[in-house]
Every structure is written in structure tokens, then in C-alpha cells.
Image 1 (cartoon, rainbow, N blue to C red):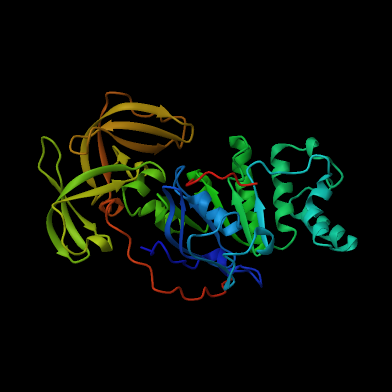
Image 2: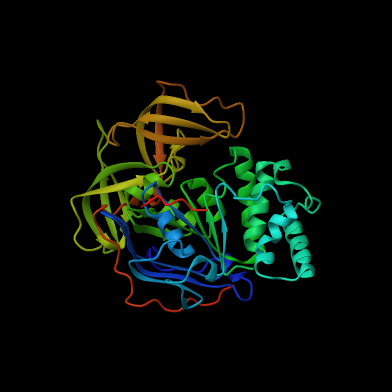
Length: 411
């Protein structure tokens, strides 16, 4: 499991452009009156990496973005871009690009004038501005739209223009504040891939704030899950989804079945044998991997998580745990069947997903008795929420070259 305060290398980082900048927040704290918005947060972002800050309202993700942007200043700690401490610099001195949820485009200007606005303010020559605007229009796939007014564009086209305006100045770091929140679902899904394509093509170090789990999973090299001003877990999207550290992460990032099982024996330091009671049957034993925080003295009961798509219905495999249950509810969602199942021993209800590969399979009916099964290696042992993360290093090693925000307090 990755330490939540350390950056890890990702494939996209290897494609970082020459000159991509690292971003480091070290021991950053921020308080608004009696509210501790950020609590000694430490985070390192690799050059060319896109990191999503994910969490509920009040978790501190927007405060983190505001500190990076220079709209707020930390009470303690530092913000460093490419090794330089920018903690006390105003926004216009940090060389950042920003995309806001409402885009903040100028309606009285054309698309090309909006894109070139920052270059004009910086005193660039007309020929350079024209060349850069043309390059950006090609990048956002709107080459014939330079003379159009903003009011003539769709929401998705406006979003592309806002992105082009943010990156035309070749920013050291790109900040994205809920960039797709104003779009409808279908358009939002398409723009997730568009933004990701452009970010990877340019190799810009990027930090995105979102409360949308799917958006974070789709677009990011790394997902950082936050709560109460702290980082609970940081890692590649698949890693954080498949191996959540605690119950908060498991339930916030997707759907998770969380239930208890009894420790019956320890096989080795990093493994344990746990007993899963099934009402009316002999207890079922399974061998589970232990997180580092629980490899010392074990409690008598462990809390574990199992994703719904890891559960099979009436299709057991050799070596899988098998339990009897009854379908309580069935919902067809187009690409999958979703079930609520009563399984004695696993709490009042569990949820299971079954892919709808063909229209011939109508799903399992309510009240139907079924056998649910799952592989023991898909069961994740959770750390108690009260167990603190391992202490960050005393100093952060340099990151190696690899390839308008509303004030919302502790948001």
C-alpha cells in the first residue's frame, strides 16, 4: 500500500514534457476560525502527473487548491513548484493555469480573443498570439471557431475554450476546479476523455478537485481521498478502488459490502485465518492478507470489504467461498443487473452486480434462493478508522523528472 503522503511513479509521468514541474505541499495547515480546514497535509505531485483530490464537502480539497493557486496562504508548511517556495507569492506570480466550474469566459470576446487574453496581458507580440491561438484551436478540435462568440458555443465547446485559455501560457501547473460540473452526464463523460487527452499530450502537471468518483477514476494518474483536512489514502485509481485502506475510503469510492468476521488463527505475520459465520451452517474459514497497521496485535474481530462486482451468483468456482442467500431486490441498469441479497452472516443485506451480456438473461427474480460466491483474495481487511496513517518522512526527497474559486471554508 502506498503511503498517503508520497507520490508514486505512473505511466503518464513518463510522458511528461521537458520542463514539466513538480508540485510539493509539505506540512500544510489552514484554519478558518474554529474550523481546521487542513491538518498538516503533505502531498507530492510528479511532473506531468494528474492528481485528483476527492472527498465530500468539507474535506479540505478546495482549500488545498486555493493554497496552491495563491488565493489563500498556509498557516504552517510550504507550497513548492519545481523546488521553489511559492507559499507567499500572489496567484499571478506562480505561473499557473486555472479552469473553473463556470468557465469565466468573456462573452463580449470571440473564442480566439478569449484564448489569447492571457498572452495579451503578458505583452506578447501579435504574431506570437495568433500562432498560439491557432495551435490551441487545433488542440481543442475547434479549428474553425476562432471568430465565434462565446454565446454561440455549446457547454462542451465553452469548456474546451476555457481549457485552451488556461494552458496557452504554458503554465507550470494546471488547476481544475470541478471542471465538468456544469455539463450534463453524456457530455461530461465525453469531456473526461478530451481533458485527459490534452493533459497527456501536453504533459502538464495537474491537480483536479472533484466530488465525482467516476470522474476521478477516469481522468487521474492518482486519486487522493481526503476527509477532515487529511489524506486518508493516495494511489492509482485501481489500487485505491480494489484495496481501500479503511471503511470511509471503501464506501466513498464506489459501493462496498462491509461486514465483520472473527479471527480464528494467524497463519503468518502478514496473513490471518478469519471465520465467516453462516447462519444454519458450519462456519466458513478464509485466509486474508493483513494491512501493515494490523500486522502486530490483532483484534478479535476484523472489518472487511467486498466489492459488489466481485460476487458471483449461482456460478461458484473452485476455491471460492460459497454462501446461501435470497434475492431481495433486482434492478436492471442497462449494462448490468444490480441485486440486493439477504445473506445470513453478512449483515442485513449485501449488494452484487452481474454483467448483462445478453438480453436472454433476464436476471434473478425477487425471492429466488441463490448461492453467492467470491474469492478470498477479493476480500479486503480494513484498518479501523481511528488508526492513524504512518508518519510522513521528516523531509521529502526531490521529485525526480519522469516522463474564480469561491471561498468555501473547509470544502
